[in-house]
Image 1 (cartoon, one colour):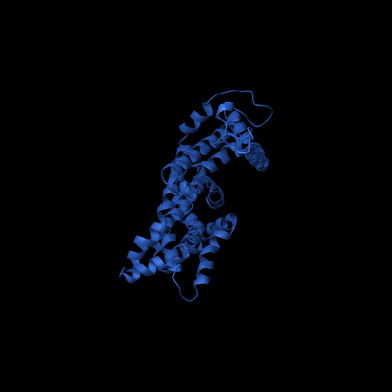
Image 2: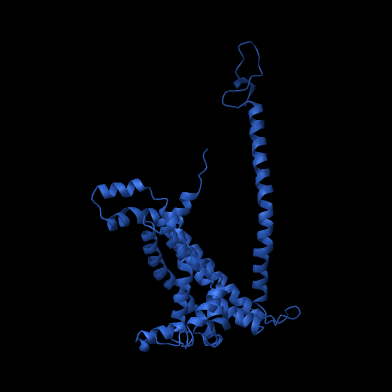
Length: 332
């Protein structure tokens, strides 16, 4: 800016700022405000970043490093094998069975827990006597410890357990099974136990979503002559979409990484045959008990990559609109 472009002050002050430029005081204040915001960002995020690096990125890096060695867990790893551990995992039929079982649990959880939880949530969202007690009862299995639930169902499902005894007393002896010891039945039995354990969480989540549906909309639909089902289908379910998609995401990731319920409830021999193994139980069986630490780390990396890719794809195609709506856009 040249001196010729400056506007002369009516009272003769030639140092007046040019048009379109803020006074120096305001510019300094803005720069100070920007520095203060950056200082707050650095101070507030540094502890979280340090913890994230220490407890997430560093262990992941060590897992990838150890997965490239044949290592028994004693001394530093020296037998470098490259990607051999990954190749061995995908050549092992037990690991492939574990992948199949995880896929069954993911799909079964979405197709069984979802509609079941939605139906129960819609019923419990209606006003009737004892509704609070029913809501509490459906949530009880979720708050029970996984070990407690696993041992309970393990006792109920033995050959002489309560389930088979009940079937015999009802004259349905043909349905008696070795629920946890039959190679063809055990994964479906575990899917039933997982559904019983976690459907309460889905119901509570959907009830929270239903509480945000404006009652004026459903009342207007009823006034227009819509039936209960039409109101739920065209008014309630579209508004409940973000909650359903969040539950699907949590259910999918939890099903891929399921370990404790399978470990406690299933019979070890069924896991060794692949009938009830999952990727997580396969990793523990080989990494800790067989002391194949390098191989176990390779399985852990595979499990992480599968979960990470599934999460990215789900967010990319199903959660994109929800995440975009939850993000505060910058206002200039």
